[in-house]
Image (tube, rainbow, N blue to C red; front, side, top):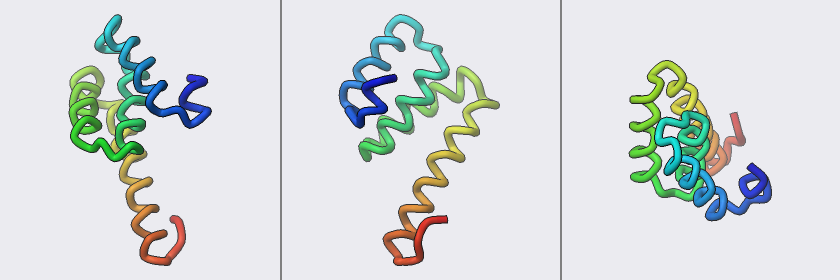
Length: 85
């Protein structure tokens, strides 16, 4: 979504929430909003949405987990002064 590309996470979250109001099982919206919540450090909300996504599509949800783990690991390495993975 354009709002997400411009770094306007709050607006992007609102737009994805509208999508999910119309279709609570819209996997792409669940996937993207999980990432936005994680990036905003709203971890409880990210986990709640991740759980919803898992119920919708357990196989594809693994992609979310890998994406979040990779980013978290990269941040830890950067903070430790070792650079990104």
